[in-house]
Amino acid sequence: MRVAIIHYWLVGMRGGERVLEQLCMMFPDADIYTHVADPAKLSPLLRRHRITETFIGRLPGAKKHYQKYLALMPRALESLDLTGYDLVISSESGPAKGVIPPPDTAHVCYCHSPMRYIWDQYHAYRDGLSLPMKLAFSWLAPKLRTWDVISSNRVDQYVANSSFVAQRIQRCWRRDSVVVHPPVDLEAYQPAPAPGPDAPYLFLSELVPYKRADLAIEACARLGRRLQVVGSGPETERLKAMAPAGTEFLGRVPDEKMRALYQGARALLFPGVEDFGIVPLEAMACGRPVLAYGRGGALDTVVDGDTGLLFHEQTAEALAACIERFESELEPGLDPARMAAHAGRFGEATFRANMWAAIRAAAPGLGLDETPPAIADAA
Image (tube, rainbow, N blue to C red; front, side, top):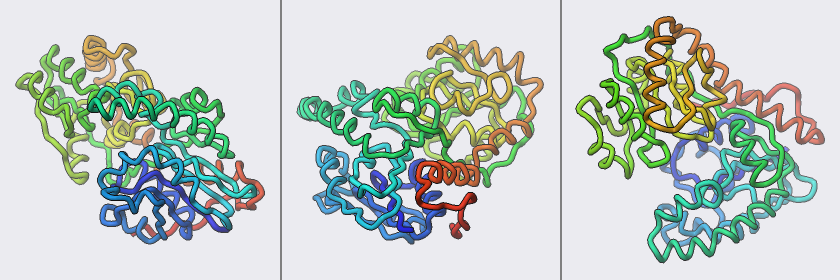
C-alpha cells in the first residue's frame, strides 16, 4: 500500500510535527509532501522519509517567510500529483487538505484546527498587520475561505484532535468528524508528592495575547501567590511591567528541565482557549492539577473536581476565585498518582491505536488489519 502524508510546513518540531512522527511510525514507507521543509530542524524519524516540497519551497526566502506565500498555497497543493497512492493523510492546520487525490484514493484528514487566521482569529490576526498587509489580507481572506470550504469536500473522513475542533469543523465546513486526541510523550514525566503551600503556581506557554498570561499574573497578584512564567513572545515586556515582585519570568526552558518545574508547582494555570493543549496533560503526568478556563480542549483533558478545576469566566477575578477554591477544597486531598493515571490515557500508543481504527473505518477497501502494524524504531 502506498501512503502519502500531506503536512502544511516543516520548519520545526511542535505539536503538529509530533503527530506527524506518529503517523510516520504507523506508515514507515509513507512519502511526505509539504510546502516548505527545513531538514536541519526536523527529527531523525521525519528525515528518514522522502520529503517533497510544493513549488512554494523554491520561492525566495520561503524557509523563513513561507506565510507570505499563503495566497499561492491552494494552487501549490492542487499541483501535487498523487497518482498511485492508495491512502492520503492530510495534517491540517495551515493549508494541507486541499490536495486532489485520484478518485479511488482514500483521503483522511487529521485536523489540528481549521485555519485560524481566516476563521475564528481573523480579526486579531488582521489587526496585527501593517496597513498594506492588512489591506491585502482583507482582500485575500474571503477568497481563502471560499477555497477552504470547497476543498473540504475532497476529504473522505475528518479526524479532529478535540471535541472543540470537531465543533469548529462542523461550523466551518459542515462536516462530521471523529475525535482522536493528539499523542503526548509521557515517558519523561513521573508523578511527585505535592510541594506544599509555599510553592509557586505555574504558567507555561508562548507569551502571545490569546494565551492570557495576564490573567494568571493578575490573579496571583490579587492573592499574593507566587507565580513562575515559562515562555517567551511579543507580550513579554508588557507582562513584566504589570507583574508584582512574586512573579518569576524564566523564559524558554529546555524540555529536560520541565519535569522539575511541573513537579514543583502547586498547580498549572491554564487561562487561554486552546484547540487541545498538551501542557495540561504533561502537568497531570507529573501529578500536578490544572486550573483551566472551561472552554476549548481543556474540556477533554481536565476532570473538574478531580484532576483540576474549571472556571467559566475568562477574567482574573474568576481565576483568583478558582485558586482559592482549589486551595480550600481540592488541594488537601490530591492524589498525584490518580492524575498521572488519567494523563496516561493520552499516550502515543493510544493515539496510534485510535488513529488506526479511524483510518480503517474510513477506508474499508484498503483491507487494513484490525491491529496497527509494527511500529518503526524512533531512535
